[in-house]
Length: 301
Image (cartoon, rainbow, N blue to C red; front, top):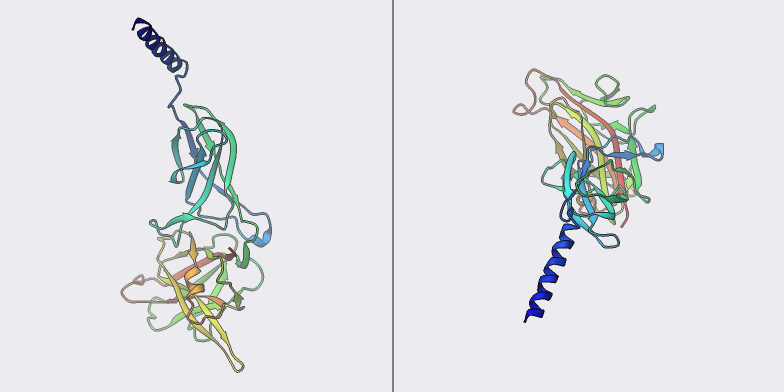
């Protein structure tokens, strides 16, 4: 009996000694992200402007173990992580799909950011994720409005056209649409000059920057060609809201528009429309809409 008590006492003493020798156990490392960047590796990829709002943060608990999701955090943030020692930290780029706070997802067009590092308890590691477009992303349409000419044209039925201007622009030149304050019958519509084939397989997104004091719409014409005529079936995708004088960048998921097109054709023309509505449009002001840095992207499964 005395021997058993002695062994139990020695075990407890050893356990306490181990705890004393590891005072940092359970003490987290803090990971902080203040900003993120999109690296453009070729001019054909357009502007580096982005609105990557979130980080899907993963870390190994120990070297060699699988990555665990720590959480989804809006930039900027600082969070505790209990991993320590040599580990891999990985961050997936997150967006608010169609600009909705409630619809946050990983933006699959961009690569993940990762780093093999050493996490030291009770310290803060500052990470600055750099993302780039994945290999295989098809840049179907890139329009910055900075080159001679435009990939968009005024529709024949449109009352108003657009201008390419530096005044009020975001980067270089931007498209500007203006509808007079007293016109509630006229409307604006433009579409791309070319028709673009888009596969139903994979993921399709439209990136764009915009600033407006009135509502306007984005959509896709599903183009149907026959032996005698070419017709477009209108697929309205999204209404954009006034931005209080600020430029915004948005990521619009086009999967539904492409796969459920009533035209069932696989060929599309992006379009924009606007019309003044007496209960919504700004009183005493012309409707002004600016659009810039459009990217129509597709990534096959």
